[in-house]
Image (cartoon, rainbow, N blue to C red):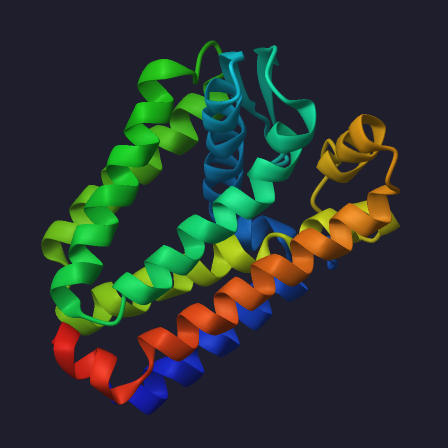
Length: 230
């Protein structure tokens, strides 16, 4: 597969997955991806809770793809923002690392390790959460070991884009047009902590995440970056 074809495939796949967010009949097709997005999102909440002096207790992921991090203490505003912003940072990193076959495999292993940390520390008493995170850990390790270079690069960059565009959910949930279930709205939590309307936070997170994705794609798809990563 040529670089140009891989680019087109990644962009088309990311666009089609976003369409499923607002089409209930299609949403089940990408539910495994939604579970992955939610685990990373909630893990970012948990890590920010620790970083701001709080205590993260449990991560729960539900059948419809929604999730919640049960915690105490820490900065409510920073914790609320960390879900989408942190996940988009992970996504941007995956996109950049996906520019080379060796680094793409390393990224797959790294993501599996990150999820393993979440499983060991926080995913408790939640069958959907345990099954989904366990499945993704196994899949990422297996894919990283078995996939050819182009497939690994395609997979990593696709997963990275999913993390970045997932921030759009914050805006769509707030506007009531998401088909993915009754997600707890981080924008409303941030609004309660700051006095700034939730729509402002949702738009800001969406803009930051999409900007991170565009910058990461530009960096990853530069000819010199591709040559150096080969």
